[in-house]
Image 1 (tube, rainbow, N blue to C red):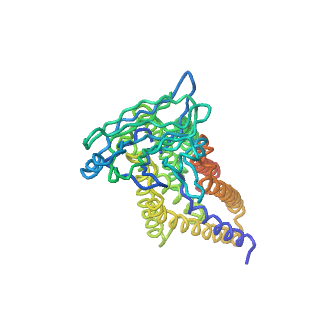
Image 2: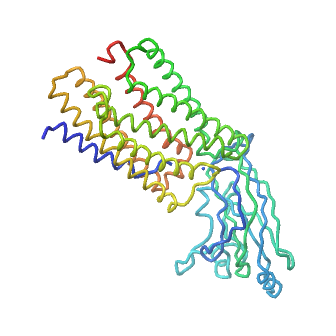
Image 3: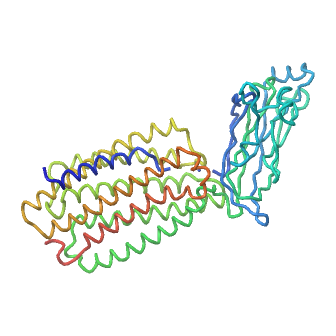
Length: 449
């Protein structure tokens, strides 16, 4: 077999690995009568985790406005227990503070809450979260207690954050008598520049720049399109559609993030449109690369009997990616669980793998056909396209490895300020691929020939 064909197949198999890692938000966290869960020797509820930019002159703010609701049985137990305080704490800390929370006893058991045994190991108050303060006063706790036999306890607090960092919030109680406690309300996290979470904030400018980049590409492309409109191919019309969708998607994401930054909320309208246009752009882009690889418009005028299969594969991908993106973005300010995400990522990854295999298989056949017919000009064009596609696959595999390392280790949290680059890479790579296709198949007086 031709060595070039073997290389294409190897690249196809390697690039399939790129489909299994997801590309991977929030500022107003809402809680709807959510329960606490056991953790070490206490009970906790995860309130959120955000990267906040701050300084002494421009602090960030975290505002608590929540209610704790306990059961009637819990209130009754509180009245009968002599040392019961009904204490609930808000525990706020950074990555650097984690080793200053809790202690390990002589048997290796981890303890979050202070007990008579733990008080001998650490200077703590029995029934409270065990903390050792650093020089800057962190980590911090904010306390509130149930009074008498009341079932509801309201808790409000405004915290100034003067250092940039990744902050995590837990609500904690240590008394077993409070089992069944639920939380309701919200916390608001705001940096000096707005409500956008630290990992997402740089994407606001990025989407603005990418919108301009697509606009510049569109202007250059349509100037050429207008000059040679008599010799335009259907393939070039497809390229025009992808450029338009790319610009529309970047502009909508910019307005979505700008609104999120200003209000702390993600309205369904703008986000849903951004997701839908993005899903259309990704689908049409894959179809474009596929039909280019098949030689459509260059080697053969039509796709023949496989048109329905191409459209079916495109339709399936659109439904899968639209479902995933809607679940990830519409009216969400937090990431959803890995199990939920896996169910939605899996169909996208499988269809993407089929696309990649189909693209490289078609490209191999097209190269063989052009070589057999000795169409040197077209063969040279497709060789250039193949070389770039190979480079794109290699770059993708390297980046997938980096992304896997980043998300499977503590580095993803430590480097939270650079997390936006993970998503930005794929957007830039897609744009560069489109630029290369525009250059190779630009409108000219020789297009139809």
